[in-house]
Length: 235
Image (cartoon, rainbow, N blue to C red; front, side, top):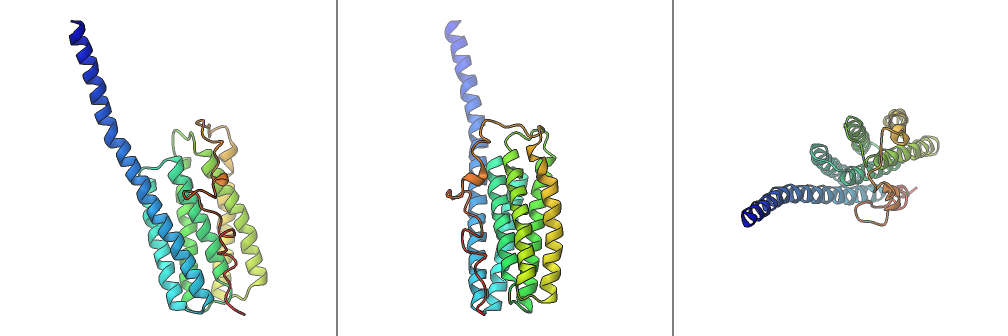
């Protein structure tokens, strides 16, 4: 009887382990897929900035399309099965795209302005959708830092956009896109300010803040730190 109970218990443990393994593997695969797409979006954003600086509008438009495609793919995967870590990584890259595209408008004309405006709007809308998905969770443990990150980024972007509108050489289309973005980031900051509310309990890992991981590949540095905002077209 003892041996039978022991064998039964052991069997239950093995079955539980076998059931948990695919779930853990799927989670790991999903996270890796998100990271690949985010890195591709970051690289495309850098190339778009370089192309714009060199006056190659066609190349900038092409790279901006790659930014949107990769960012949308990463967000789709994250919204389907997200964790605080993947949500934070997506939010961080969305912030980079917002700051980077806002900076690109200086001196741009024609199709490059339209491509930049479309990419800026896509990043803003995607980030708002991510924040809404987090706010809709019944268990928000671990997500306070993600919303705090979005809140901080949106607040900083408001200042960057104001500076761009005041100082840069902009077409009417660029001005309209930036003014709309200014309104949207203000709303985003208001919507995510609840990250400090008691409705977002910690899960023991919140001390490891997204904002403190800029040296980590999962949370690359801000657009300004990476020089994206400084990528201006030659005077």
